Length: 85
Length: 315
Image (tube, rainbow over all chains, first blue to last red):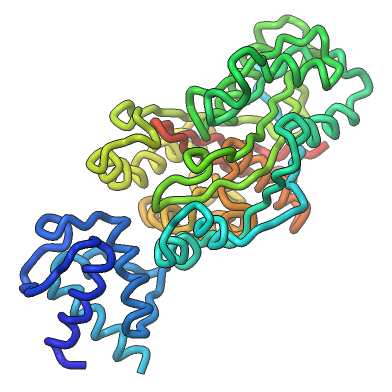
C-alpha cells in the first residue's frame, strides 16, 4: 500500500467514525484539534482500521503520539502493516 | 484509635453470563464500538440475570455473612452503598427493607450513594466511624452492595465500560481479625459532577486527569499506612476497564501485573461491588497472604477517587 492509498483508507475510516464525508486530508491535519476526534473516537477509528486493512493493534502498547496528525496515523498504519507481514 | 476492620467479606454473581459485545450490540452500539469494549477495554463476560430481583441479588452474600455470626443482633448498622441514587421507586426505602429481610429490626439502616461507584469504600469508612462512636466494642456494621443495570443509562458508560451484576457484603467491626484498614484516601473533583451527562469537553478533561487523580489517592492512602507500592501484595481494583488501568499503572510507575485485573474480563464493572468481589475472587483462586497488604481502588463518576489500604490479619 503506497502513501496515497494509506491516506485514502484513513479518509474512508474517518468517514465511518465521524459519520460525514472526509476527503482531501492533508498530512499535517491534527486528529483532535482539526478533525475533532477525541480519545475514545480515536480508539473506534482503530477498530475500523483493523477491519478495513487487516492491521492488528496492540491495546497494551498504544501511544497517543501516533494519533497526533493524519501523517503520524499513516505512519502508524504502515508500521503496523509492515509488522504484520 | 482502633482501626476499622473488614471481619468477613462475601460476594455473589448471578449464574447466567452474557458476552459483553452482545450486550453492547443490544444497546445499539455499532459493531466497532462493541468490539472496542473487548479489544481495547478488555471486557469479555458479564453476569446478568433479568429474572433476579434487586433484593435477592443484594441479600445473597449478606445472608452468608450473617449466617457466620453467632448473634446477628450485634449488627447495629446496615449501610447499603449504591451507585445509582434511586435503585427503587421513591416511596420504597431499600436499606430499611434489606434490614427487615435480613432479620435486623433494630439496626440503623441507610443508603450511601453520593460517591457513585466509590461509595462502597466510603461505606466501610463510615461504618468504622459509627462503630468507634457507638461505645459498644462488640457492635458491628454490615455494608452491602449490588444493583441492577436496569436501563441503557445504567448499563453503559459511553466508550468506557458496560455494567454487570454482582453483589457483596462486608461485616465491619473493630475486632482484630480479617482485614484492618490502614489507610483511606478520597478526593472528589467537582468539575465532573455531571457524571454520565458530562459535556464532551468535561469527559475529555476527566479522561485526561483520571490517571493522575487516582494515582494521587493511591499514594495518599499508602502514605497513611507508611507503605510504598512495593509493599503491596496486589492492587484490588474496580473493574471499569483494562485500558484505564494501564494508564494508571504507567502513572504509578508499576507494571499492570501488580494490579489484579482478572475481574475486568470475568465480571465487567459491577457498580460498588468490584473491590469486594475481586478480593473474594483472589481468596478463592489463589489464597490471600496473611500479614500481606492489599489496596482497594475505586472511582465514582462525579468524580470521586478512592483508595483503601487493608492488611490481612488472618482469623
